[in-house]
Image (tube, rainbow over all chains, first blue to last red; front, side, top):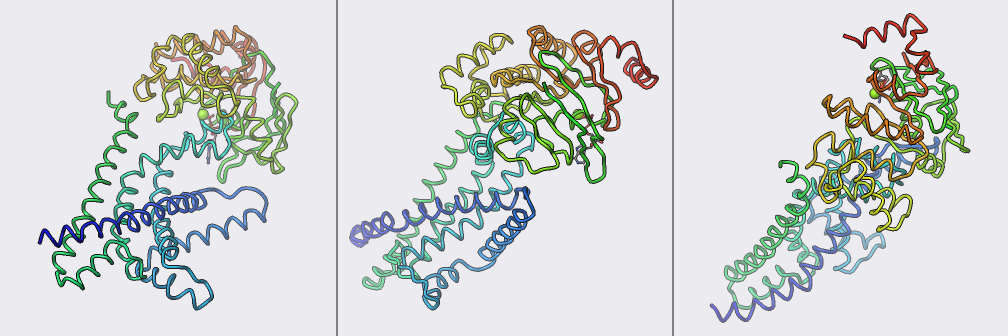
Length: 231
Length: 244
Ligand SMILES: Nc1ncnc2c1ncn2[C@@H]1O[C@H](COP(=O)(O)OP(=O)(O)O)[C@@H](O)[C@H]1O
Ligand SMILES: [Mg+2]
């Protein structure tokens, strides 16, 4: 048994380093940007002239539709549509790109709700204090709102990221050679499915445990000023 | 000079400012008095465009905007740079240290050099007796300390005018006196200030001009002496109601 583990573990880990982790990290990063934009469009109040307001309403409708769509359909179905379906209308991605696109959009939809909630939880007076100093919208966001919202959103976002790491196993269904796909292939050769799938489960658990530890560390760090409040 | 001309602000169910015209001279302290809900905050917040009235003009120095027209973002930012505001509940940024709270505006809005901004911040903190708090967070400080720091935050912007919206209403009386003394010193130093307050003693002693607001209208504008001489029955009633 040790023999089998010793020979297959490096292969599984390598697949993790080459596919699972990059897909999760890149998709999460892109997803967060999509989420932040989506959240901001959905919470902001339209200003300006009639045309501007109308365009804004259209944008809001679009983002609401996007969030609804990705939250109410299975991730596996989304992967199939993007990778196997879209080529029918001339949109062709390689498996890697299709995976990143789908995971990013999926993460973006969920995380946008998290970020929206976190931003809305901050008192309006924080915006006002920042604006009264003459800050631009962007400065208010990056200097005042996002740092505080991130602290609120960190636990749910960490959950999303851990969820995403596990969900990358679905990428095997669109031919990506990530960890689960590799263990599947090894199992089909050595006829040790229990051992192989347990082994890959342990590797997933290991990754996720490291992330949990990281999450606790970050939460502590970001809450310095709140902990201080209790003094 | 700050000048509001025929400013009108209508909320869905309330006429908060009704054709308000008022002037705030430079290097003077104008105290805004009036009952709760009169429109004092709305008036103050129209000046730094935290509220957008539907009609009227605002002039600060050389710059005039018409509220009935869309105002370009650039103009809004330029106007806001001329004033700084001290809020009733101070509204410091809880995730930043005291020093970062005071230097955020100077560094990011005024594009000051970080070291220079910090030097100014430390000097201001020293003036209000709080230099030892520089590296702490707002949540670690008392309300009175936070309010003094928010005054430093406003001063660090070197504004043409400082706007105070009931700066001591959330403070205990002995702490209130501490904060009002700082305001008094600023007034002596010829800062241009607009102060909404319920403290009659402060109004009497510090105000160069008093504006009495009621039901969204300016019911009196004049010297503090004239105001405390009870020029109208309504003002006499108001002053009596403020006693106990
Ligand atoms: N955002 C708002 N929506 C609706 N009504 C408001 C809003 N803000 C203030 N008001 C109303 O406008 C009036 C004036 O408010 P405000 O300027 O805060 O009064 P003051 O500061 O003199 O107590 C009040 O009656 C208040 O209820
Ligand atoms: Mg008020």
